Image 1 (cartoon, rainbow, N blue to C red):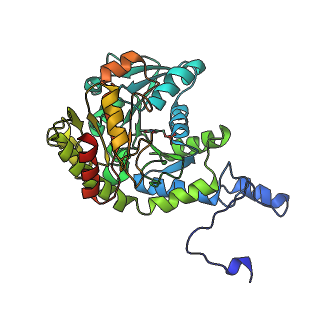
Image 2 (cartoon, protein in one colour):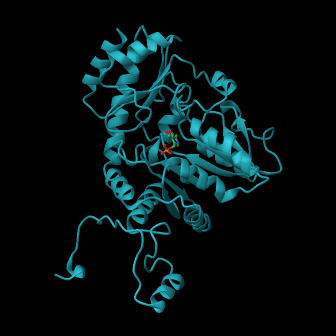
Image 3 (cartoon, protein in one colour):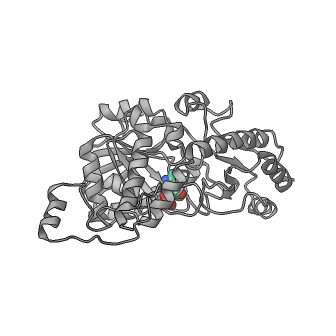
Length: 376
Ligand SMILES: Cc1ncc(COP(=O)(O)O)c(C=O)c1O
């Protein structure tokens, strides 16, 4: 049988670093007609293109790039708008890796950062400098699940001529599509809900305009941030069930949050689906009635109490990532938010008693029984 007679339903894994050309005319065609064929997998590969297109479709963008990790996605997004001498605003409630990138690495390249407390996000006057190019925030913040009013923030950014870059990892486009609210770029750690099975490290950035999408692809290629065929393929497969998974994660997380809210061993619960959450109404409308599978809760600030919880729980193993179909727990102080300064952590309330749960899609009564046992 000839190769061209094979019609797989699923895109095969093009596990190749390079593609063949018949002659010089063929390579010229590659350059003259972008998208007509593939040359080198760092520049483009059918699997990474399929993932970029899938994320782009979900986020309703003008184009996207798939990256080797969520960190590569954040880097690509910032490099789309910034160069040496520029300044970035970042929401104070942010993943520790984003803060590390800004504080430790981009500062060496001459890109400075200042952090905006959550309450001041919609009045940026006192934070904006002449060289400020963009504001980076998360739709739902890691780990305290504060929910940003994206429409209000986009309006505020536009007034100051800033680009709005949104990390939509916790919310996913099933809940919220930030570009529709006026964001310029939206990015993901695809490692999390998009891929969804804790077996891939990947990222993606989606642009609102074709110009920014072209810039992103150039940055991805030239900095070598793009994603491998196998990881792209796994991510595409995971994304096919994202809508169902996120609904199931959200349902389970709501039950877990309500259980913890009234548990005597628990001092506080941070979950936007709870009526008592300060942004509950906003979260309900911006998330179309879903609140995601992530929540944090507070035990007494005593490492022995936290250790006991971790040792006794079987369904929430301490695994410092999130958003897999299996539940897990993490400890922001020791893992994701280690890179924040002491002052940043104290300001946010990231203390030893703060535990973050990634609620999976297991039968929820099994999760509740496990938590009851672990908190006894
Ligand atoms: C909100 C958020 N953004 C970005 C990242 C970084 O993603 P990755 O680990 O895929 O590089 C993470 C990782 O935990 C995250 O939680």
